[in-house]
Image 1: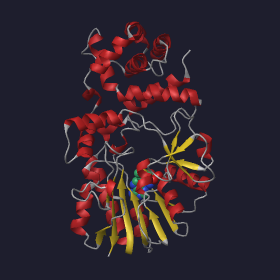
Image 2: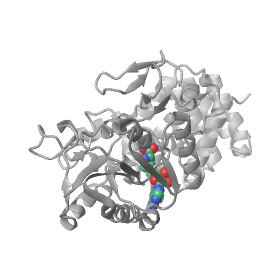
Image 3: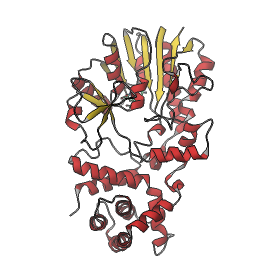
Image 4: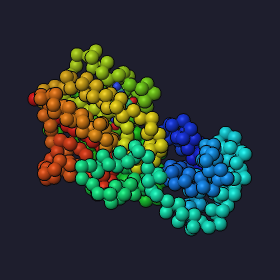
Length: 429
Ligand SMILES: C[S@@+](CC[C@H](N)C(=O)[O-])C[C@H]1O[C@@H](n2cnc3c(N)ncnc32)[C@H](O)[C@@H]1O
């Protein structure tokens, strides 16, 4: 019988390759913790090695020039990934369930039952050889132009080919989730991160903390976001703008840090705003949630702010480790348009910053169009904004400034364990 984990992984692959959708945060929500672990492992390997898996199959087809329907690609990729890289999965389970998948018209392509069965059985007879053959295929098969651009941008301006390969290898390891504890003691499943005060990691092998998170006693927050929000600033803000707020990680950090301030948390997408409201309510965070385009909200408001956090929508190129589907859907990303939107958000926010106030612009992306170019634009067009050195020296990349605090948060892509970010801080004269 088809297990829920394999069916869920197959559905997620259909969403990515059939509809160009991201794998949603809750794609495995209906699964037991054990099933979710298996589904995540199978899906992760299939996505991280999709290019190689297809390249392995192609020459084994009767007519390699004819592509396979998605249902057959998915069943084969799932089966091969388990046989090659998941020693704990019995060969018969990997083969039989892939055959069941391809026989299911909702997620498969029943006429290819025989093909899937034959190809996987051959792989199952010699799992070591299958693994060796797949591993020997060029890693570049799994990297799309978007990935190459992200890797090169992350390592710019100085990088060796060896760094690029090392970074790619680093991105292949699923990240260990990081948490912040908001109420009470940390649960026993968590251990303190020795390098980042206030950050907690799930202990090796511990189950994911769903109910604890739902209770609002803690939240998932990547190490980079935690380090970013630990900016050193002595201001005592009275009115904070969280310009792009859902799902509320940074709103929560702001409220913990500045409990006396009024926070306006603006979110454009109504569904995301609902989630934001719920998250804030569960965590006991007080903020005015405003469902609006932030530029409209600002244009219609007379208020100004002494702290603005603009965590802008972006390509997410810094999140490749957590989102292995990203390389395969990034063809739909319009980088020029995103960059324009980010610039417009900065244009709307800057006039609303009080003198002496702090503006933080952040994106989880390495691409210069989403970060460095905006910094240069601010430098050229807004002399009233002065870079604010609010992060410790290790986060900066400015040559010659390795020992100074920095106004540019750009964690090192090889030495830092966390998402890729570019963030900049300015104060207004
Ligand atoms: C990178 S996410 C923010 C993550 C959030 N700051 C956190 O730490 O949890 C960007 C959010 O901004 C929202 N957004 C994008 N453009 C917006 C706009 N013009 N006005 C308001 N919200 C916007 C998106 O819907 C998305 O929820």
